[in-house]
Image (tube, rainbow, N blue to C red; front, side, top):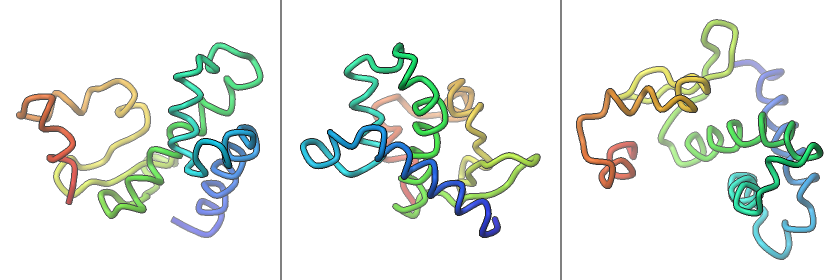
Length: 117
């Protein structure tokens, strides 16, 4: 990861906060929470929100995992990805597809415990 990659992450997260600025004070300043709320409010089908959520939700999720010490940012095949000590490399495509869940030999209710450090 270089400074340009980190600046990209910061720009995407700032874009989420700017796009949903009316919710930052009333709901949450956390970009992941803002994306979750936007999906809850069915904003993903709106043209103005679609692009923000397509890139912003993945980056916000990744950032949350990095900030909480669960994963590290990496560049994998020229793409931004995450590395988890037990699950290996998690591309955003792999996360979205749910493919990595097939590697997990635990019931769904235990997933939150399993991904923690």
